[in-house]
Image (cartoon, rainbow, N blue to C red; front, top):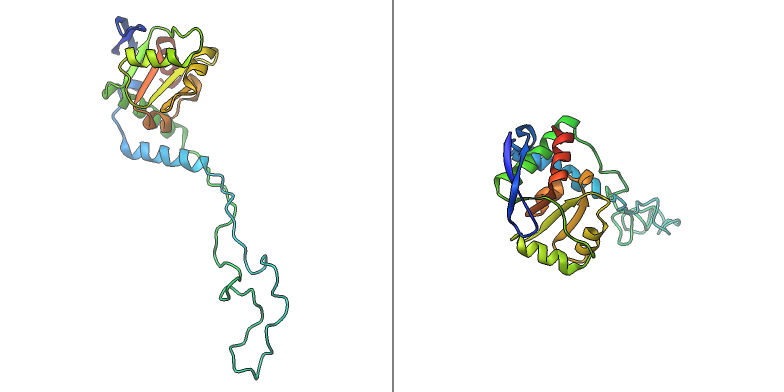
Length: 207
């Protein structure tokens, strides 16, 4: 078991929490993390891009000139791909880019991402959030006391509405539910702030 300090709102150590090495002590597998991030980005793609083929471009119903005798190359439609204003050959069409990794690989990638936060000393475990009014200045003050400089991912439970209200207007700060943790966001943000109950829930689910 790994022992990680738990701090209060003033960044004073109040105790330790035991973390499962199977979740928080994994080696950083860069190839697996790359695959997980690629999957996440592909799943965010809308895939609504489209181009018109010669069958979809309007016009071109009449043969431009007769087949023989004009001295020019034979042509059957002004919407041929070789003509200006013609259709597009092999252009993109609507498609679904999403796919999923095997469950074991996805779990291992998430554990590797969380372990990287712990190894880089960018994991901050709070005993509890003391945000009451949901003011942005409360979150700013909290981040300053915790020395959380740079982009920060705050993970709390869905019932903590003041934290969501206080962090939604801050650039470089995202607040999400503990059940929504994913590899892409863990790697995108420098710091990870989570409560003791939240980190125990992560360990319980992913151990």
